Image 1 (tube, rainbow, N blue to C red):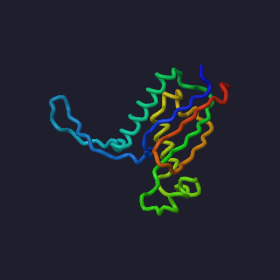
Image 2: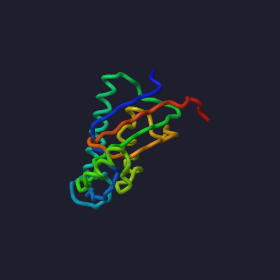
Image 3: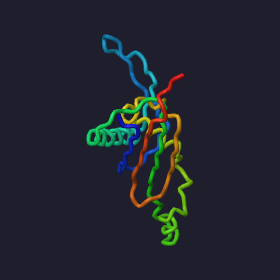
Length: 157
C-alpha cells in the first residue's frame, strides 16, 4: 500500500460556500399538502466542483492504482488561481515570480473544506484522519490543485 499519494488536477479551485435553505413540501398518503419543511443544500457550483474533483481523483486512482489512506495523515495542498486581469505588466511579472500573493477572498480555509469533502473516501478513508494540514494559495497562469497526502502513523489512542 502506498504511504504517500500525490496528484495534480487541472481544475479551478472552488471555495466552500454557506449552505442555502430551501423549502420542501411534504405530502401525506392521499397526496394532499400537509406542511413545508426547510432543508439545507450546497450551492450548485460547489456541488459541481466536488463532483468534478472526485471524478478526476478517481480517474487518477484507476490509472495509478492506490487505496485510500487511513491512520494519522498529513495533507499538503496548493491551490493555484489566476491573477486578476487588471494587473499591470510589472505586477503580473511580480505575480509570476511569486512576489505578490493572493491575500484577498476567497479564504484559503474555504478552499480546503470543499476539497476535503470532495476527496473523502478517495484519497483518505475519512477527513477526520487528517492531523496535519499545510495549505497554500498562489497565483499561476493556469488553474490547478496539487495535493499530497502522506501517512504519519497507524497508532490509535
